[in-house]
Length: 342
Image (cartoon, rainbow, N blue to C red; front, side):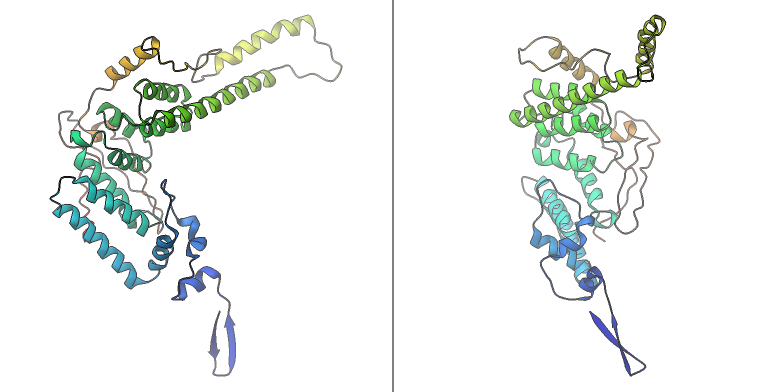
């Protein structure tokens, strides 16, 4: 609480809300995250509360904020100057630090640009195609796209991360979120057929998905039955004509529906027998997903969301003018000249 003198005589107390009072102070309480938790983006690996408190406090002081920006420049410079055997590692270190130092994310953090430049740098290197660290960067980048399906298709077509269960889980859950449960089921089955690791994690995720899907199908069937029974008052007896019309109206309703599955069908459950329709579907998927060398040409209609804590604006993806499938450069955002070292 602060007080100030007015006209040299009267003392007036100014009541400040907890957040404003905290920003005006210079002490760290250890509970900073409680005041700003709605602005903190969650991380799958969790956050260090001590680092989170320090980062939130730092962004309220210009001098400390400048120190964060300078440290980010040093990390990016370290990427350029790295001469070791694992050039992906400095990228991972930079990404993890930015995630902790800029907990709100957004355009100001530059995190999406770092994701993008990282995946663009290594997508053609075979040694990183099965690297879980590299896949995680791709998956985090996909979360910042309006339609991550384009990203997942690109990864599967170029066999990036397809040996890991997390790829199929993220891909399938994204399709489930789009109400494409049949496609999600096929994705899970492909991962199980290829024995993506860890298999236990993939199997557990598939069982949960299958349970949710069956529950939705049951609810949909019950709603369809209840909503299309003829309305009648208590004690009214259905005539023979009315009873004969009921199946016809029910059939009409089924025709109007456009479900992700055929009426009366269920999902195909994965069976590890080395043969059968599932093996055929996996082979067909391989034929469909021919490698493409330019994501920009396939994703020219995709728009990227970069949520900004400051202004919440969107940055649209530039459209790719020339559809050159022979390009060897990943064109995620053509013409992006942003330099995070400035």
